[in-house]
Length: 284
Image (cartoon, rainbow, N blue to C red; front, top):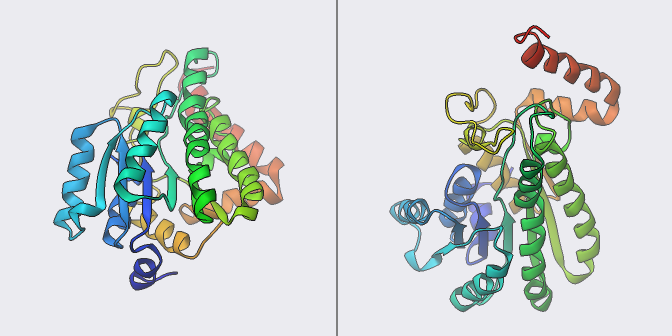
C-alpha cells in the first residue's frame, strides 16, 4: 500500500472536488486530500459543517487558500454550471471529481413509496451523472483527470430492505465501468469505490418507506471499518490509480468474491439473513 509520502507525491497541488464533503467518508477524504497538499473543493448543502471541515483541515496544517467551500445541492442540476465556473475561477482546473453524495433507503419493498425510489436513484446516480457531464469537457480539454464514483457492497450484492438503494448503487458500478471504457482514449481515468460497512452516520440518514429518516435510534452502524481505516485504503489505492477499490472487512470481501464465483450460495445466504432480521421478529 502507498505510504503517506507516496500519497502526497501523487496528490499535492491536484484540484479535488468532493460532493457530500461535510460528513462520513466524504469528510474523511477531504481531510486526507488536504493533508496530502491537494486543493480541495468541499461541496455540500450544510455550510456550517463544510466550514467545520475546512477549519479542521487548516488546524491540521492544510493551507487555507487550498480549501474552497462550495454550496451545492446535487439535485439542483441548473446550479451545476455556476458551481463548476466557481471552481474554475478559484483553481483553474479539476483533476479529480469524487461523486460521494449519497442517500440511503431502508424498508420493505411494499412500504417504499415510488418517490423514495426516485429520490434514491436521483441522489446516488443521476446527480453523479449530471455533474460528471459538466466536468468531463474540462478534463478532456486538460487531457487528464479522474472521475470517482461511490458505490457500495449493496452495489454488488442484493440486500434485504434495500430494494431502492441496491439498484442505485449497482447502477453506479455500471455507469463507472461504461464511462471508464469511453474516456480512456482522452486520458481520463475512472475509479469506483465500493465500501462495505463503515461506521458513519449514513444509516441514520437513510429514508424509510414514506421518506422520513430512519434516525440514530435505528440507524446505528456496528462492526465493519472505522472511517480512518476506510480512508487509508481509499487514499492508498487511489494514489496507485486503482480502477475499483473494495473498502470492507475481510468477511465482506469474501462474500463479494463468493457472489462472483458462486452466486447461488450467496442468494440462499441473503434469504436466510432476511428471514432472521425482518420476518422472525414479526412472526411472519
